[in-house]
Image (cartoon, rainbow, N blue to C red; front, top):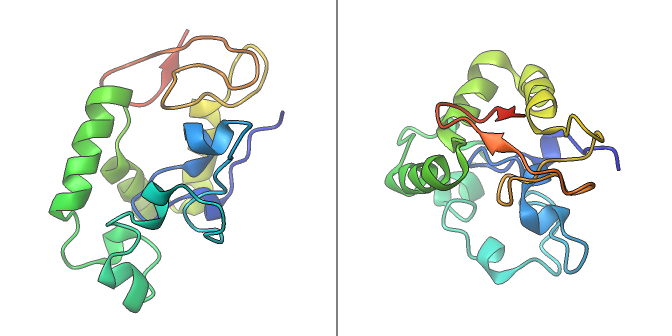
Length: 146
């Protein structure tokens, strides 16, 4: 399965929904934070970051467009993802802002594509969603290492 790396799969918080377990699973598959809300898990519908006033009312695309960036909610989420999964939403948002979406997506593709089969490595499981190959992550960044 060809990995899906497009800008519609990048959530306002900087999460790449294309590498999320909920997106990669076969049953009750989430379509990502930006796509229509039909059949989404309740946790996605009630996400405090996605439903933030700045994102909803000011039509901002990403959290870095807010004057309160990074807010406490984003810092909390970022801390959890850094510790548990070795990736950073705040770092992702900085890369999108500083490098642009095209370069960010290229980097994501090289980071999260399985070297064995070309499938997508799941950030939550640490393994390829296609072949099941396990991947270790560097704690200093989000690059998989063999």
